[in-house]
Length: 149
Image (cartoon, rainbow, N blue to C red; front, side, top):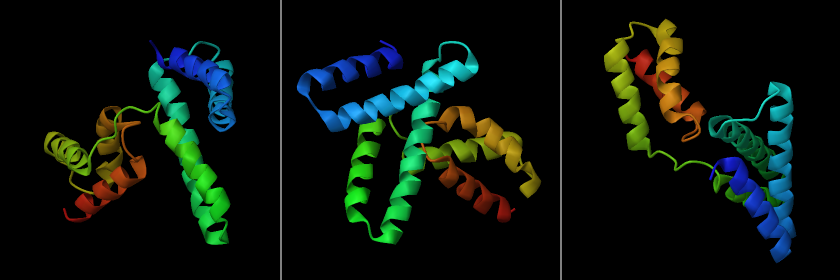
């Protein structure tokens, strides 16, 4: 079963269970997927659906930071629940050890000489970690390693 089918099944299941919160989150992500589908003028692959969901999670995490700064704990809790529901559709997340191992392998393969090689390293690593870890964290790790060269 592909990811789109799984989302549709969960949508129907939420309707049957009258779980309005989960239903609203699934409808929202379904809308974002539909918009992307219209923009690309074709059905999306599971990878592209994961990208859309990943963007939705990132938006919510940014919102959580803003809500926390504003002292709106009620909104933080709701948004955190939304992130948890969206995470159900994401592939298993990589541990920090696995991410570091992938980065080290890329460094051995490409043998970067300066921070100008950051793009090459990101290009090498992206397909392996995309959707499975926070790319912001990956970028920080790579910058630290490059600064030590």
